[in-house]
Length: 200
Picture: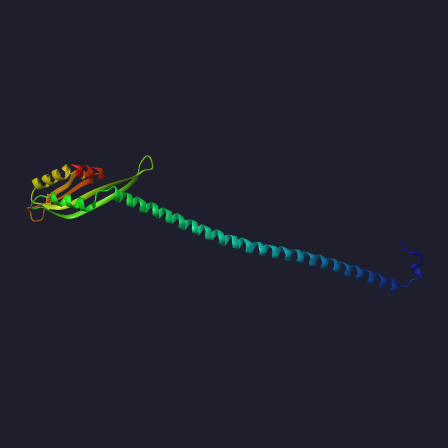
């Protein structure tokens, strides 16, 4: 609605007044936007500072957790090594001394025969009650003058309390055409058999 006195006010003054009003509104809008931007920036900056602080805290906890994990893994390895060492000691404690086995293998050897190789294999398995069971197998390779010497050697080993399941793997003619190459495999008996022999 047009004011009755508008006709008496110069148009230039009205235009200048409208321009000043637009400028004031623009300045007010710029101020509002600036204040809102500054507030948003301050809020964001505070948030980033909190994130940086949390990151430092998380990094510290992560390093601590990594150190704990490494310590845990190291302790677990030490425990496993100790268990393995205990198993090895147990296997040696429950087995017949190697010197006694070697003595039996060489003393039972017939005249004119010799051993070229001796192999001892130890196996470990877990029983029904989580009990570790060790078994040892011996294989000998040698040369004998004839088949009867090999049979005599097998009989001697089979009658020994140190060996069980003595079996001939092969016997064949040597390159010289006179001797016999042979291989015999047997299992090592339990230690209690040696103890019984000592009591006799």
